[in-house]
Every structure is written in structure tokens, then in C-alpha cells.
Amino acid sequence: MSVVTRFAPSPTGRLHMGHAFSAIRAHDFARERGGRFLLRIEDIDGTRSRAEHVAMIVADLQWLGLSWDGEVVFQSARLVSYAAVLKSLREMGLLYRCYCTRAEIAEALSAPHGAVAAYPGTCRGTPQRDAPHCWRIDMAAAVARCGDLSWTDHGQVVANEALAQGDVVLARKDAPASYHLAVTIDDAEQGVTDVVRGRDLFEATHVHRVLQALLGLPVPRWWHHDLLVGAGGARLAKRHGAPTLASLREAGVEGAEVAATLRAGAG
Ligand code: GLU
Ligand code: ZN
View 1: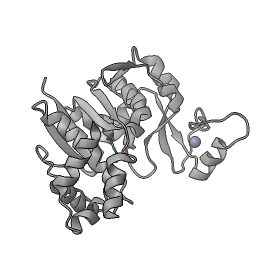
View 2: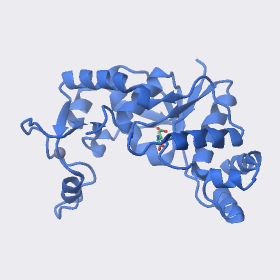
View 3: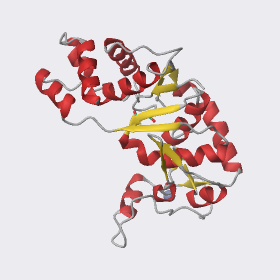
């Protein structure tokens, strides 16, 4: 099976060196294997996503010398698909309404008894009411329905720890999908075989693996790379005194040079 990777930025601001590093890793992974590299704009956050950022992302990637295959996919155009999947998960009895405000959740998380890292399930089993709500997955019930939920990172088998992530949000108060739901559906829909992305999303993968099992989606391989700190990035930032790719580009820095430095630092 031919390799397909993707770069999936959220257009909520300018790209910086860390994004460039991640895009190059995903791009090169596919190209070195004769595969396809896709660009997906994760713009379900209607209040924070902006068209000007999308234009900047495209210009930044071109400047770095990266090319992608096919049309750019926008998550904002796929809300109907997310809503349909959400409905089927609801019909499986795995979702519940959460009415908590951010402040209430923050308060619950800082409660003195026990260090709770995930949403403590406050609204699970409470009566439905007519009020703004997001939809959360009952993770324990979901995991109980699935068989083997392990996955691979750099070819190594990783035991699933989705339970530690708690009842994550699958649909927001203002959108029929959350990052977890949209990314899982789209990776499957676009035939992504290898997810190359930063280590900051390692824990999220446990959740994505559960969703794949529930929805009968194919399971890709994951390659979480170290985040760019110091090394090439710091050197570049220091030399040019500029953190965003756009500012480097506008200052006349050669994108090919930046890309070469990042590749050299990747080891
Ligand atoms: N849109 C996510 C971000 O910008 C990345 C999604 C992913 O690679 O899974 O952090
Ligand atoms: Zn709640």
C-alpha cells in the first residue's frame, strides 16, 4: 500500500519554526517512499480560524519548497460528515451532554482531593436539560466495547491509555466536532497511512485509536517526532531574530536554506 501523510495546521495564527519542522518531516516521509503528502486546514474553530492565516500557511509551505498532492482540504467544509458520525456514536449510547462551563471544569480540576488531570465526568448520568452543551464520550464504556486498542509509534507497540484521557469532548458547544473527532474521520477519509506529527499529540492518539475501533476505520501508523527546541530552531531564531516563517520570508531569508537547516537538525 502506498504511503500517504499529511500536514494539518490550524489557521489560528502564523506558522513558526516548529510547524516548518513538522511539515518537512511529514512531507519527506512520504516523498522518500514515493508516497503522497496532503495539506489539510483544521479550521473547525470558527472564531479563531482566519482566511488570512490560510493564505500565509500556503505561502510559507511554498517558500519552504514543499509541495502537496491534490486540493487542500478544509475541515470547515466537512461539518455535515462530522455530524453524521457524531449521530452514530450517540446512537451507540456512548456520548453524553456536558453543560459545564470552562470555569466549572477548572474548578473541578483544581479540587483538593486527588490530582485530577482529565474531566472528572461531572455530567455523566445527569438528566438532560435544555441548555448549551458539548458532547463527551463515556471513555470507560467506549473502551469496554473495543478489543485490542494498541497502536504503533515508530514501529513500537504502544499500550492504549485512553482511559487516562478521560471523557474527552467530541462535539463542541459551537461546532459539531472537536479536534479528536475531525482528525480521526479525516485521516481515514483521506487514506492517511502514516501520521507524522509532533510528540505533543502523543496522548491524543490513544483517543483517536478508540474512535477508529468504534467506527471501524483503518488504523494508520504513527511517527511522533520530537518537538523543535534549541538545536536548529534556536540557531535560526537567534540568527534572524524572528520567530514566524512569514517574518523570515518577508525579511528575504531563503526558504530552501531554512528547510535544509531543519533537515540537518532532524538527524
Ligand atoms: N491541527 C493540529 C494542530 O495544529 C494538528 C493535527 C494533527 O496533526 O493531528 O496542532
Ligand atoms: Zn460537564
